[in-house]
Length: 217
Length: 301
Image 1 (tube, rainbow over the protein chains, first blue to last red):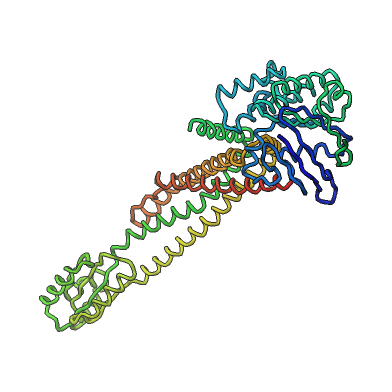
Image 2 (cartoon, chains in turn yellow, red; image 1 turned 90 degrees about the horizontal axis):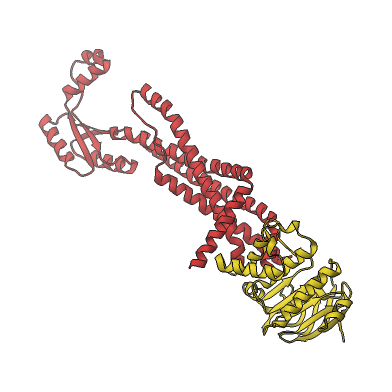
């Protein structure tokens, strides 16, 4: 499903975030991406989501070469990926419901069908009762769950999560990890970056460790 | 098709909501656009009215042909009939030499007329042309001069030439002013859209990250620009119409003082529709460029 071949990412100014990384992730895998901050975890996720392009090497996702993708094709590619951000990237000028609806809306889904799917997604993350609330009134854990609801509402086959539990206390983190495992059980491929070793030990799954932009076996 | 319609309706709703979120700023922008539209539209209306006012005088453009003195009145009348048969001539009047003296007396110059031993005036034809453009008049004058029977041809066409030149200048001015203020309108819209994009940049970023196309992001802004332009155009039209209504009474009074009857014409419904449509299109274009630029910048960051 995801294949990185000899990928190097160098940012303007010379900083090399990833050096010659090769990695293969099969469909249906649950993969944890670990490493200290600045090890290149976020950069790797951004390359897979086509937010950044590799300086050297290939990034292949769903048998598409992401690095060479043309700008008009990007939106359609991203619709197949659920993105979960550490800082949630919620829109605070609209309700919880509308935040999730946006993900369907950009694909041209409106009306009752869309509303049903939004409610189903909110139900899965336990926010159904707060659909009319503004995101600013939610706790950190709830905001993260809202971000997850938005990522999964369009039923992507691949979910990328960048430090989803970073700012959460243990109980919330466990909630969210349980949710991810439930997605994985229904066949969703997950790539989750984290620096929380306990979490990985508790949940198993494959561990890909990065150190200073290099893959550590 | 239904989804497409729903989509556009939604974008329209977003645009209207954004306007309602900042009504004061929106109204000011619309007023600025309205004034920008009102200037060329007002000038156009002024010219249109001047044209009409001048048109009221134009039929008086006459060419006087003084006939050779040896010509008999009957020959003169025959010539008059011949000229009257020509297609570019509206009317020909034969003025006999006796009538000419009568006119001098009527004009208060009877002393001069009485002091003359013999009537020195020739018979004359007063030709009223159908077409009063300077070129057509010149043409007619040349042909009348070539007549054997004609002694002198008197044409007072200078003022028509001047008027035509002035009107041409006026139309050029309207065109220039419209172009400049049209550009200004697009720029004003682009600027307000830029401010909006700045306020909405979180939304643009998130929408792009989760797979929105450029078109999806652009659409509400385009609607906003279009609606703003439309409202501005209507405001401009209303300003001009209001101005025309306010001036109408004084114009009538001035005309009455000159012994004429003249009502100020206002913009026709068609003018208003054209004005609003043009203004909406310019607003749309301004928004298109502003969003295009912003999307390129997002891509680079």
